[in-house]
Length: 507
Ligand SMILES: Cc1cc2nc3c(=O)[nH]c(=O)nc-3n(C[C@H](O)[C@H](O)[C@H](O)COP(=O)(O)OP(=O)(O)OC[C@H]3O[C@@H](n4cnc5c(N)ncnc54)[C@H](O)[C@@H]3O)c2cc1C
Image (tube, rainbow, N blue to C red):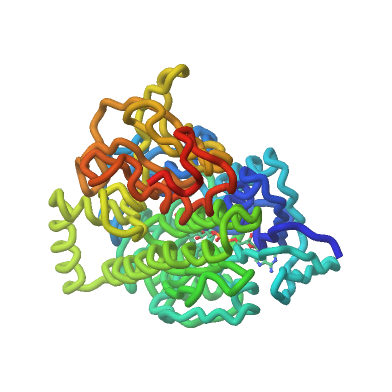
């Protein structure tokens, strides 16, 4: 039996991002993918939001996406546009880029990091015991791993085999999306008709027609046919405009479900395997990528043995509420895209509200993913939130962006006070200490200005795990040893810090 530390089932955006995170941490990981390449049949994601751009920027790969996509204000709520150009982030926009291109960029990055992807191979089952997981593969196997992560999409075999419940809401609406030919000239554009949003657009002057149309009722199963598409068009437009020659047709619904647990012992779930919802508001792919970035460094530390296995429970605790909120907001958005005079009235009220500054900031903070706040206890507003990408001055290198300190996916203790003031020798094998100066404002999306801290402990996912001074009572390092132990494991034994104090006594 061959072995690896981690098997990832599925090389979609989530699985690829997780593979990259584990590889950066030096973990031996194997990805198993049933598709021969990253080609996506039909249409899926058309882009992602600001926080996902930031996450890629934290790894130094944002430019790969930005150079191929279209920067735009992609956020909206039920198709009511939300502008975030005044948000305090370098990326105060989203990116329009088809899912296939996103996946190819990620696959190239993962390839550069040397991760093997076993293509045209399916995970067909697994059994787990106290020390690992035997992963059954369609081309033989099994493959023995310490952990298995199901990044295998909404119909996740990993989730089902683990017996993890997937509660939620059945579809209330079903849509078909297709590329086809029409013999008659339709009314082009986006219209709210029938049960919701309908789109007819031509891809280029002589290109095929992109159709998005709601079906007469939700709950159909099986592969959609040209007949289904024609029926749906007649139901909505009164005609199918001479529909013929569909290159592809796919169906999506507003089913909203979430895994009851993101972990069963040595098996974890991420991305669509853990949550599915209506594709509205440019969220699904980005949430999966952010799941991966939350999980990767934790799993790496547990595999390496520097942190206890219990650290993995914080993955569910932090990420489950984020996707639960996405499910709720997509359900609200689908309701808002309905038709009829009463819904028009409701949309007018919502549009008016979202035109006001404070409601717009609140909702846009959620839709862009910039307001995500992990509950790490009371304290400075930065605690548990994303670290802003400040322009620092670091001796002797000079100007440096915070995000560039995160390229290696390692934790950073950023000391903005007296150089050398924070000595954490028992953790310096794991945590990089950077003395830097920063004179500019501290501002967070939605919250606005926050007090300037003297120091911040930044996790590899870019979230702040500890904030030091100046308002805090006690010495500068109060609570630092606890935060370091909680997130990066106990102090190395026999290592004294720079002031000659024994391990664990920095506070
Ligand atoms: C019409 C539509 C529009 C969308 N628009 C957007 C958008 O604009 N923005 C956005 O952020 N999101 C959007 N989404 C959602 C987005 O496509 C998904 O959230 C995203 O693809 C999830 O990525 P994933 O890697 O978690 O899962 P998937 O993309 O489903 O990847 C799972 C992978 O696992 C593989 N796999 C499955 N089972 C096995 C197995 N047993 N063994 C081996 N491999 C396996 C599959 O082949 C696949 O490659 C849209 C979705 C749809 C349907």
